[in-house]
Image (tube, rainbow, N blue to C red; front, side, top):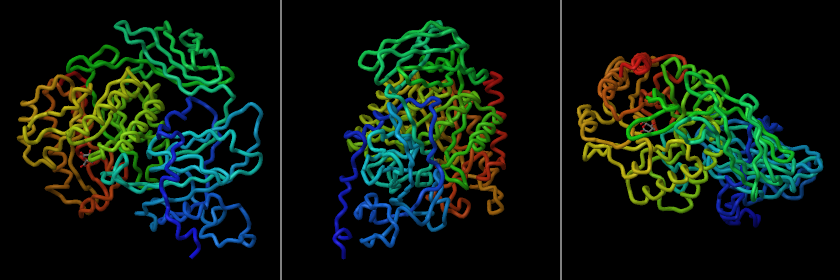
Length: 590
Ligand code: GCB
């Protein structure tokens, strides 16, 4: 055997993030409306179960005709099978359906350097980690399957043809976020857009603009982080704003006098905001509003708020996690039809377009990171990964008025290690963004029949996932729990529901029938509607979705708790039940 085939693979050789502490968010740049050169389309592709590519260094292979090769390589990245990017490999070929491991993507990048310009690679998302190689050189690795990452390639790109390779690995391991066990499909691949971004030498790394916290609800605060500039200009022509902020060590914050029309689900008003630092200029569409919690109440722009929501996954029966504009629009049209003013984007950061569109549609958003179930809470590397994903999400989306809540986790048992880990996440979220509410989806204490979780002290909203009528059969416990609980802050029922298979295989009554699901919803509504500390609901879930763990005769690879079936068209009876309930909430009858 050739020596390279025997060589042990030392993961740490490629375990080098762009930044030594795996703080990839430090390489982010502010996107707004920046022009991007798309690298989407066909890429050469190969699955690599044994990580032979890392051992044999496929990335260092010279592009040459096969007959000119001196070594018998086990793969040629420059020819052969291609797949489209973005895509999830499971959806492309049946033999890749359950594949978990590394896969290689290769494509040429023809480039002509321009004096005074910088070039960055942006990958919208790759599930789960992604190693980047350019012209045979390892550039870095990004962890986290749902947030974008950036790599500056200015010094590595050469004039003419370059070769870019991505090695994406979706293997579930115990130290990741999420870890091995979830209730959604472990799609793999480069499933969001890939592009190059050209900037001048000066560069706006970060920009955050929001309402000044004040009872009057006027005035804005803007902060800029930029390289290669001493000042930055902020302009909002429609509000007559044109201000200059001085940057010290590349950072500056400015209070701006302005009285914008406030964004709300009823009137989702957005303004064009322009930021300039040196020669770099970026625009964004931004709405302004306030969201507050006082005691057990929620307020949007100073007015009491009840979150009429629905949970959604990023999952499509044909494309996997690849999201189209039509899909997003259909999703929000269904939410609006149900009477929602709120969506929970579960259980990981969705595509940035999902929140841009929520801004336009007028839907409030609960956004979250996949700190799901039993994470390795005592492991510092896991914690860094979760922190990094949270910061990447917040920096990507904190100019979106729709986003009202950052959620730091879902159904995690109340242990000391979990408390320290998630308290840290709540603190990071507040430090990154003091203008939004922090939540987590918690569990009820089934022994004490009470809402009780030590994390609640660090949250603004206690999310509660409860499945009375489904996993918990004794429905009479739910009113007891609610009577025993006196939370000092608002509770949102972040999940409740029941499976219903409405295909021709589904039962006509009992568990998994449409009628049974409808009955669960009737009972839930009757119990929850009069509780003064419940300030919203996001039932589980808008559409049936794919998941490996559900293999029952009525599930067949899908979680069937959708209010709409996996075809994304056929509504179950519960849809109309929720619609009627939300109509009464909106009419102030609750
Ligand atoms: C939950 C989880 C969600 C599952 C759901 C279910 O509590 O948060 O991810 O899909 O229950 O259907 O069991």
